[in-house]
Image 1: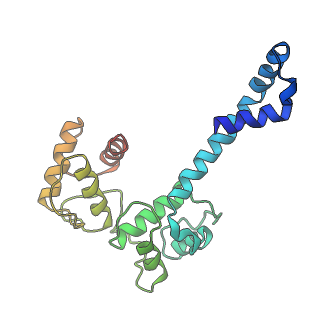
Image 2 (image 1 turned 60 degrees about the vertical axis):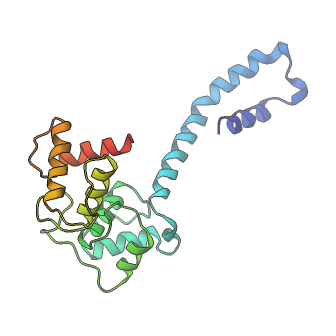
Image 3 (image 1 turned 90 degrees about the horizontal axis):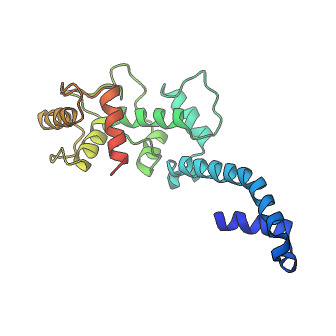
Length: 203
């Protein structure tokens, strides 16, 4: 990317025959002047790439606006937020909660299994009883499955990835909380989930 940006600036301001020792400082000053704009473009492209990665290949068959409207119908996407077609944090969190309630891996990625469930008549609507905000002994959904995968990746959980918050999952959560200087109550709330997500990103 840096090479492309440099080449663009080089061609825009100098012909090959003009680049000599005498006007090198002039060329350098022009590159420095334009560098902030180039870096801004690179940053924006990086953010767009990250958002598109979360869509998976199914985004071609399930446009983001349709995804947002469907999640609204089911009560996961805020009705007061316009369906813009941009796959950002709000859409990803709504999709993760849908996956949680429908016993799918709750990772916020629109994979083929999630897409099929959304398009089917068996999709479960949002319920106050099912939330990705709080997981504890007895919980059973896609959020627990994601939790078990994360704990396993960090070496705390060695049981079955079954989406059921059983005793073995609780022990793993408590050990993780203890090692992370958190209250070891075995309940996964906002704080525990944030610390867990941050540590998984680092591996």
